Structures are given as structure tokens and as C-alpha cells.
Length: 376
Image (tube, rainbow, N blue to C red):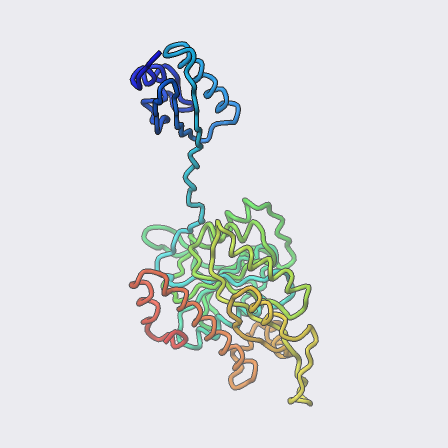
């Protein structure tokens, strides 16, 4: 018995495509139909049905053709699954008007000097003529107020475009907001993730930051809710990882780099800073003692393919300066200040390289900021 293509088409119109609500023909599920004598060759494209549904459909096609067209027809069905379109999952934050570049300063573990480095980089940038702010996002252990000698300060409320905003506290030319301004020194912050994220959003978006060349985010150690909240809330231009050369610290620093490289985050790592790289006593200025190991962070940078921004020595005056709220970057002519300037300039250099991937107007805006010598 001979039969034609139209008979097969009419038979297939009686079968509903899985998940389509239309028949196989009208839904476009049949991508190819060939008739060779008593043979029927079918190509079916389905939108990711279950294996059970696919097998059931193939059985139904054969039954319908045998019943409505030709009982002895030889049927070959080639079923393909249409891969779902992969949705863009990169988290994108909401920009803050007036802020040019936002950089997250992180560490894999606590105690490596991340907040100290953040404070000193901010002061170094301010000394170079840049407009700088710090958001102390270390919700559970805010230390920036201590390092800038502004413990107990309370941000004032100002009117901005008809809305009430927080005015950051200014110290050494740096605008600062911290959860530490709203808690007592002996008060523990015991918050779950959502509450901490809400507090952070208020510090970010309910503040009158004004015009800033750089906003530095002092993140908590490790990887967790706060980090995810930051990358979801703000369009970060880049991140910096701080670590000591110690193997234990480096193992956690690797995790920090991996976090920023996650497919749904993709924040460029501008580089690694090795803190407490070596110790030089005053009485032996030519000696270097590698207390926590030698070149560990530099080797990690090479291994992970990220820039090495420089090494900062272990200096007693850095600790003393942080404790009294006067960052070491203010100590002009000292070796630590020179190291901080070098690290800061290297960070900005990597930022400018990263921003070359942005639209031309963005890159031009950054490279032509007036008065900020760090980026000229």
C-alpha cells in the first residue's frame, strides 16, 4: 500500500507535543519528515521533556501512524532535545551616583591585616588628591572607626533631593560609614544574614557619599552572606585579596579568589597584597626575618594568574598607629609609607587596565579625574 506525506502530517496533527499545548506539526516539533515507500523517517525536536514522556510520545506516534495511515509502515523516529537557553546569572549591582570606582578589599581569614591595609590605602589615595570613601562592611567586627580615631562618632542626617540621608564621618580626608557607629563598643552584633544585608544596604544607599573617585569596601574575612550581598548590591570594579605569606592564610586566600571568579559573580581580582611579609628590627636595618614564610602571596598570585600588588613589612609602628587611630600612611618619609604608596599605585594601575574593558566614556572619565595623582 502506498501513502503520502500529507496523510502522515494529518495523523501527527492528532498528537499533542509535550508541554506545548499544540499538536506536533503546529508546534514545530516535527523538524523533518521523509517518506520512502512504506518507510517513515521523522525528526522530532522537544523542549527537554522527561525520558518517560519522550518514550511515551514515540510509542504514540507509531500507534497513530499504524492506525490512521498504514498498519505495516516502518517508522524511524529521531528525537532530539532542545537545550534550554542559559540565562545570564551574573549578579549586577545598583550603581551609586557620583562614585566612580568601587573596590572590595577581602581576606580569606581574619588576622592578616585586611582592615589595616584598607585604611592605609584609603589615606594614601586621599594624600594623592583622590576623593575616597570607606564602607566598613565587617558587620560583626567593625574596626575602621578605631583605626581613624572616630569611635563613638554618629553620622548626621542631611536632606538630599528631598530624602533623609546619612552623612559619612570624615577623618584624614576619607569619608567613612561603619556599623560600628551604631553599636556600643562592648555590644556584640548578633544578626542573621538577611538582617545584616539590610543594614549594609542602608549604609550603602541611604548615605550621602557625594562625589568619590574610590569607594573601598572593607569586607569581613572569609566568604559568606555579606560578600554575596555586596556583589548583588554594588557594581564592583574589582577586588583585592590581602594575605600573609603563611600557608594557612594562603589556603583561605585561594578560596577568596575563587569566590570572586565564580561564574555568577565574576568580579575581577585586581591583585594580591602580601601583608606582614617580613620583619626588620630597627637595630638591624639591613636584616629581613620572614616570620610567616617567604613570598607566599607572590607565589599564589603567579599560580592563580592574578597580579601581585606588593609586599608590606611587619612593622611595630603600624600596629601602634592603628591602635591610636592614626594610619601609618600619614608617617611621611618612612619605609612603610613608601611601601603603601607603591602598593596603592599598583592597585590603581590594575584598575585602569580592568576599566579598559568598559565603554570608552567610562575609561576616559576615570583617567581624567582632576587632582587624583594616583591615576594620572
